[in-house]
Image (cartoon, rainbow, N blue to C red):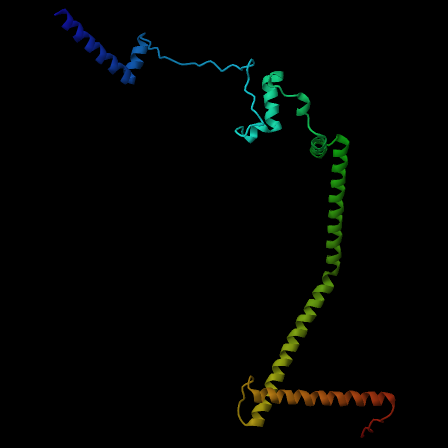
Length: 229
């Protein structure tokens, strides 16, 4: 009888504890009432350096990774274990070419104050010269602006006159072709192109004779005809 009562009480206690742990409002209520639940925590201790028998990779072994055979890894080992690493500190010093490279990089990225001042002054001087040259060019172009505008307007007028003359000449040629052939001719037809070539040839011949006569008149070989009153 007593054993059965103990078993029933143990079961009730287990159910109560499970309900308390799964119910947050009840847990907060119980904590306010003074019931504190303690949770287990694990705080592992950090591993200590094995200075008596440190791991030093064998550089002659094929199983050793390549990154453990570099000078960078040797510096890490010496910095961690010191003389226990078995590494000669002199081997960690950069070689003459590496040292020259480091010095050149320091001079490039961290120059002395006087050098920085001279570089700043040179850059400011160069910027000032570029600005003055730009202003000078703008002033020269502005001085040329009236002439450039006048030339542009003249070229525009000449182009307009030339276009008008070409249009009139084209209409004249079409009228002459219509008069010669008795019907309207397509400007792209071989007959029209042949007629135009013939007319241009005659015009060139007339211009050539006119220039020759003018040269002869200037030389005094031919007297101009008398002007009738």
